[in-house]
Length: 114
Image 1 (cartoon, rainbow, N blue to C red):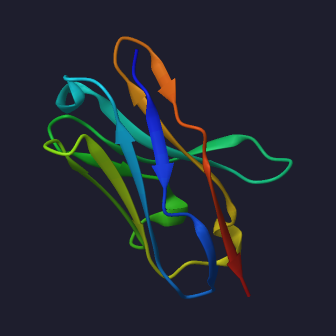
Image 2 (image 1 turned 120 degrees about the vertical axis):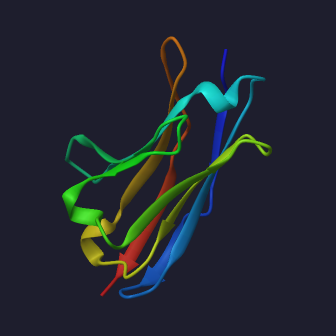
């Protein structure tokens, strides 16, 4: 069983920055594929960024060049640095870990005002 706890969401003006954190339980965190998803009201949950155990990363086109995913295996934590935020980035952001199956955090709200 893997437990994920997100933090770092909040209200920010357009053009601002936030850093989300996701702390994971488990002794094999370094082997997990970690992802951030987001879900805006009335919309489906979309993949934002992925970081593999190798450290390789992938991003949705909508956030490339603005968001950065990273991981600290010593702290069992994955981060999402979000810069140049836009109102359309407003959503609940969810941390996901894949370790034989998918695990999800409870989500953290990010609101970007124009």
